[in-house]
Length: 270
View (tube, rainbow, N blue to C red):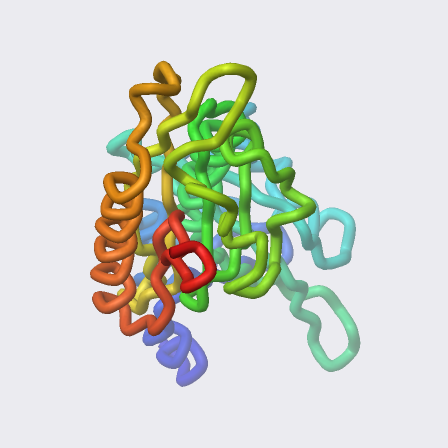
């Protein structure tokens, strides 16, 4: 093993090389882990994966894979995604970076390929898309805020329940009208002839290292007869209780402003 191969062996990313005919001449341990197998050098061609698929799941012949195309066309291939199937049936989504190798005279001698595993990124994007579809289609009010209490997302359910459209709410400072500081906001909104009672579930959003990034809240609407809605002191106590709950969430992530959907009762409201 040459010094350069020893260096490549230590890298945590999948790398392999081929000769000008596409026969594998080297692969590191990360490549073997991605493929789930150890291909035979000088025999296996183009790629060490057992089976390949295009990003949309269609079968991809080894002779049509990005490494093969780069060697046949004499130029690097970029911007493609593919899927490798291991012998155990599991699949890995990856982005290849096949690059040609030439000698001092410019003669093609082979190529090396770096395979970037993007399976986790794809799964996260898929999960995000699914959640996004739920948020968009939900009749509940689903709201996201920063740690400073600034609204960053506001779905159609929130528009229907609270009466403000998305343009009035997004990226506006706390303390403004957009914090739902209308009379009994979040508890009673007159829509048609019924009152709307909104309860909420609150969750802190964290990044990959566990640091609080903001808050997601879900408000549920329940239409009740107007005489069934809390009035006067009872309503004020309910709002104060909700604000106390929101402060607990804020304290948990070190936020000064409450993150609840209900704004505190300011002096002019008391």
